[in-house]
Amino acid sequence: MHVALLGSEQDPQIQHVAKALSQTTIPFYIANTQQFGSTWSISYDPDFDDGLIHFNSPSLCDQPRVTFSNTKAAYWHEYLPGASLTASSEQAHPDHTVNNQSKVVKPKDKPSNLIASATWTEQERASTLLCWFSYSDIKWVNSIDAVRSHQCKPYQSRVAGKLGAYIPYTFVGNAPEVASQFCNNMREVVYKPVRGGRTAQFVNKQPNMRPLLNTLLSERPVTFQKYIAGENVRSYVLGDDVLSVQIDSSELDYRNDDNASVSVTIIPNEVQRMAIKICQALGMYWCAIDWRRSAKGKYFFLEANPSPYFLKVENDTGLDITEKLVALLVKI
Picture 1 (tube, one colour):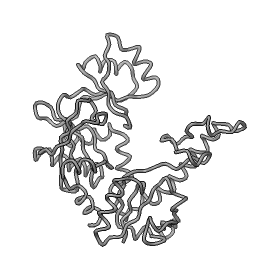
Picture 2: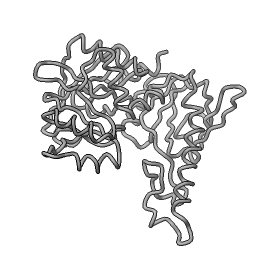
Picture 3: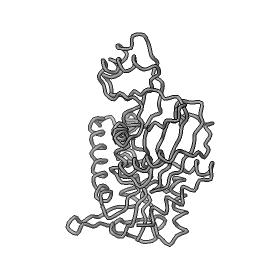
Picture 4: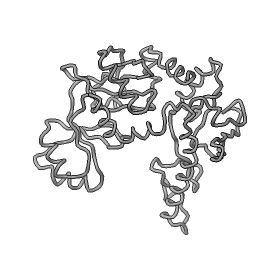
């Protein structure tokens, strides 16, 4: 029985988990979705409800092929879209469209057709991979549904709020009259993308924001949140274990701060129990929950990441996240 590692074989975190697994008796393979169709491929038989992962390189697996049913567990680190068909040397744009069209489109080509072709091809790849991702006999750490929940932060907040977690006052949508009223009622407001992928920013409040909001919200919906003054706390939930760190930064979003410092912190037992409940309610075996700890000691839930980076935190603090993650993968 193998363990699958979903991500690039060049990624330091994939290499780190692979090294840890190599010290066990459990064989593993690496599946880089960007190389799906070149270094590895899939054959699936819905009649037998099983499939095969075929490998073109012995460096990815100790066997030329492994069945879905012989994959014990899978660690979901990163899904990478495939390279563009029109320019194999160009990396595919995250939005699954052709990037840098002026460089790769021939004069007689129609850019719209190329974009449609690239999008359709990526959809076909994704649908085929879904045969594997949705194979329920594999212990996905974490599942594609859990990953998708992270792409809708308001959904996560709703789940956490129903469990009793504190949630910052939030507006989500593209109705300018409501957004304007929300901003006027809050002293400090933070902007975040609904899906994520970009760092948080302060909203530059002005006496009359309605015209600006009309323009902004005509382009896209947004998430506005009341700013919670306090400290950044991240809790790594691994099954029934919770390991927490405090992240000190002078920036609103510590991801923008190269000088942010990390230290081990102890969170109250009731917050630990809440973290475990949120992780389980979102269908995850493990995650990293970001909290904002207010001056009064309240923990406000911000998000739960189903495929967090942890290598730097582990190196900086000595917390053994890897051991607990590998234990989740090798134990059924």
